[in-house]
Length: 279
Ligand code: ATR
Image: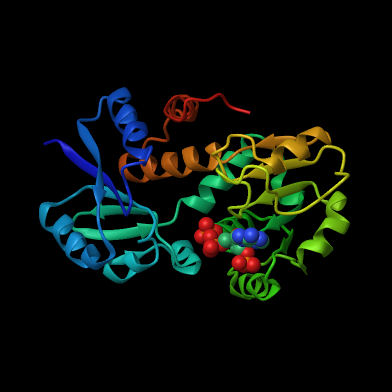
């Protein structure tokens, strides 16, 4: 029987996941369909009951349901529990299990570009939901020194206290981080600053970066944010948010099928959908 997968969110029409996953199912000869499913907040519980009733095989979860969905699942993976958000659900013989592949996807995408990740001195910019998934997953991957800068330092402090894995972290405000940014091997930009249409904005100022510095931004619209442009002009190697998007999808696909898919193919597909070229 044809397998059924989907992505739930509100709004959902813009999602690039259906094209990406349907291409993979087709490529690997798996008889399955992946559909966008518009679910409003007030209908979330009923939708999950319906999914169980029809035996959906798995689904992704996007804004605004990533936290709320945890109330309606049977089991939650410990990392997703700690992050407090689920983006992937697997139906294992009637039991709905929630995972978070956002942070682990980010780390996987990074390790394709960078060797010896645990030894890097990292500055995480931002302390919201995306930062939380990345911070915990980087710590899970063994990163030892990872500082956080955020406009609201209290939020960064909460993140540090909540991390279930050992990691050495100092907290900076934006001004403080700007002064010492050249000490870091890896900068990770997780805020929405610089996202279209506010493409001239950047989260912090810097005039110098460490030689060999790597700068990553989780934004993919635009493909090259002002933050990445400036880091590149100072000699840094850069990565945009397509990697995180592709690798969270690849890890979800692996959870559903046991196959870790061709991420180059996925990236090409996503870039086609965005109508651009990679940086
Ligand atoms: P997400 O779930 O996408 O990470 P979020 O939880 O709202 O979104 O977090 C947004 C992050 O961007 C936070 O770190 C936020 O800083 P505060 O914690 O101080 O609010 C940061 N951010 C958003 N807009 C900002 C701005 N104009 N200036 C500085 N930081 C900003």
